[in-house]
Image (cartoon, rainbow, N blue to C red; front, side):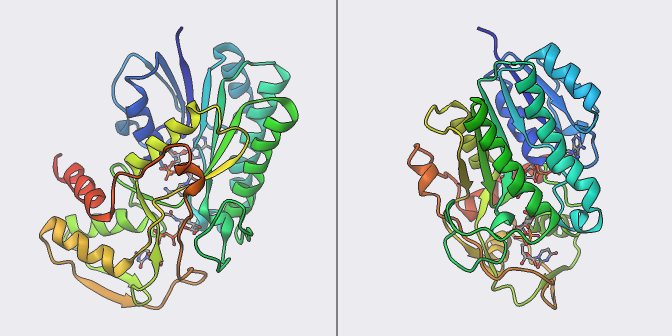
Length: 313
Ligand code: NAD
Ligand code: UD1
């Protein structure tokens, strides 16, 4: 039987890595991305891919696409992924990060489209400044920004569409994902894409704070394995999973590992901590490991593969 997959945000960092891995596994991949952050050049050239440079808020387009194409699986990755943008433009980002996803769910329901599974990308941002560590899926949530509020609410909508209307769903909370194709263009881009960009261009990297803040950095290949596991598993139904490694490293540790991997010494300066920055973030990943997920990369092997992708070009 032919398998058709829709990926919103498929030209972005995580989306394009997912598409690359899906190419050999499915028959057809439909991508909707407005290229506000993603790049067409992130995508492999393949006649299995249909690419639409459209916004998921173009409701007429999205309805026609869903009704005509009737995909088997949907990955909802399209979002304004920058927290700072959500603080600057809360109404616009709410439209993209929540309403457009709700419209997709409702179109599927109203048109009785038989979906095998729909997966939504939420964020560790939903935990906000909750101090409990490690963060479990049933820990308190304290979303502190429009981005985090929309992610949490949409995650609940997705899961509720599963429970109320029988649509098979799953949601994931990504921790700090890094790897090839992450776009360093914003000051709020993932810190590892910024550090990589500074190393390549021989520029100075600014640490906000003393570098002792810790994060659960997860390499994108592990993230893709987790997504494929969850979309396939009948046990992962109408619930949310942390996606991370279950290990935290400090920014200072990351920098020394990256110096070893690249053989370069990075110029560093220090600035005051970012307002609202949390000190420590770490996931409990026992829920997803109980399904068989094992993260393969630690920070050193992940950085080595990331660096190789940057220098191979
Ligand atoms: P990204 O910005 O690279 O990918 C998001 C993609 O969505 C981009 O290609 C962008 O062009 C596209 N997009 C934005 N607005 C759109 C719109 N209106 N219509 C269609 N496409 C639109 O970010 P990413 O890191 O790949 O994130 C993927 C998903 O994972 C996002 O939902 C993000 O919020 C979530 N997430 C990522 C991380 C991380 O560490 N990278 C952490 C938590 C959550
Ligand atoms: C991440 C998410 C954010 C989410 C938050 C919730 C990303 C890119 N961001 O933020 O959406 O709200 O988790 O937990 O995944 N840093 C520097 N110098 C720089 C850039 C960053 O020192 O030039 C520091 C930051 O201050 C922070 C750490 O590096 O302490 C990591 O920063 P970043 O990659 O932006 O991720 P989070 O702050 O964890």
